[in-house]
Length: 256
Image (cartoon, rainbow, N blue to C red; front, side):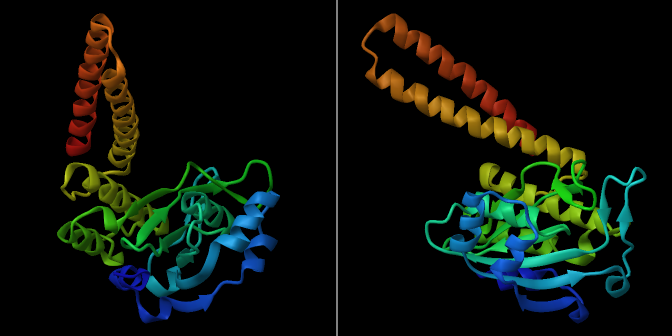
């Protein structure tokens, strides 16, 4: 599977198609990044393509402006990324979401399967006219799930299956789908949350789950080296408690 397969799964009108390669110099010219981040953009990107633009006059879905003006979504963009081997992909994705002023569905190419990332944005409080990320991008890889769950994700991603109140709700729908793919990699089932709030709850549970698994692994490693019986018992109790907490986090993923 390739990023183009993900783009095709959106079932966008032909008038949305752009298919233009984005120069790296353009990204650097429109972003306020430090030297290390500029180097990552220059050296980490093999190719970046602007695949599609979803505009109100083409899809019949209105633009969005929050009542307080803090969020504006005049259009949505779909982009595909081929990163060079060894690149810090998570950081590169964040930079691209920051560099592009519109919300983007970014599809990155990986050997194991395409990776999708989304990021909610707001108007910058520091610089008028600029945008900033509300929170770190949410990313999920199709290579982390079995084929049936990947197919279910692609089906759920279709434009016509997103809430059509405005372009902001469309983008939130894509975020919910991306969270569902992350969840599927943990619990083995793909189910789209009913609301954005429920998806945010799942994100918190995913973070808790990842943290607890790391802590359990460390404790298991410690207990293998520990010689003193009282300390081994103490470590075993800690592992049990964290496994209970992990079970609660997984229950949250299933129920949200």
